[in-house]
Image (tube, rainbow, N blue to C red; front, side):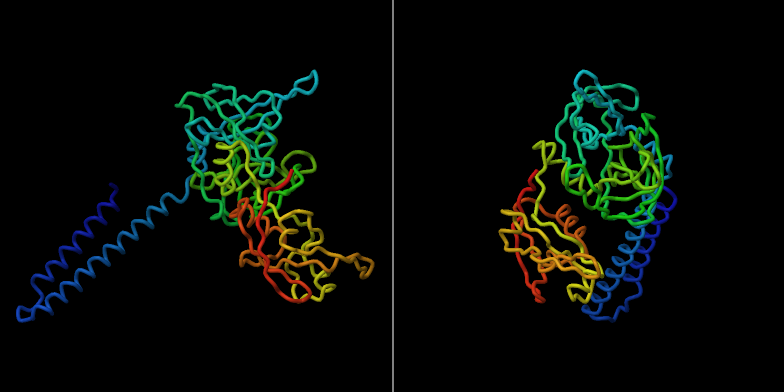
Length: 389
């Protein structure tokens, strides 16, 4: 125990002894039994309150002391659990290889990486910190969140799982660190801050990935699938993409949040796939010009333009736009329902709907939509179905 712990323990003991002394010797002898008991109860309450206050201080100190690590400590803590992922893909006669990153998820040998790192590979090799390599089996991939799970039968001593943090606690400006294998340079670390939260990231699947973390930590080809860590050394994201015109880092990187990882990875391990909930609509966010055309007070909400046939939206009777008008040379779709809230939460744009689906909804769940139709607000309940390919 450190000096502060000894001091706190001594303080608690001293307080208790002092108050007990007061109970025994300060209470007047002529006090009646009820008064004595009241005084005892009051002093015991004071003791408990003081002990609780001290325990709270200890807890706060504990949280503060474990709140941040140095970058060197984060690297030492995380490096044993970060791996290199090499893949081989047969393209007719020629074989092409790729390199990415990953991290140990559990002692069963499951490794988390990006779907785009391993999907379609004919051979996947995982290399640990000490240089030992193992062939990996692809357990499951989810292209809609770019998460992939592979498995190796490795020496248990090599399997050092990293802890998942809570990405919902991240704040813009918070320091973070990324570890991976940029350009094949194993065990490289970069650092930066969280630039923004809740980004919508386009993907090759045809559906955008919601709720993505934006960071300015340098992420380059080869970092894909590696961990994004907070200053406690816990994983808050999987590095997945960069925004660049050259293919190299230009200041904006993206990571899949740990909330999404925690929700999807266990199902990928058990079932090999994850079924995403789906509404079946397309449309546009309400911007100021659209709000003026539609006679809306505020530029908030999502205008439904198309309702997919036989979708949850169609089954619930949602209405898409049925007319196009031109104002100042620009065409506007009108007549469709406008989603203004989902399950009681305001909708500013489509991102809010997609993030809500990703975080808390599954196939078969009900979802309540508050919509604006013909100038009046109404509520519609839909039953979410599995997203079609």
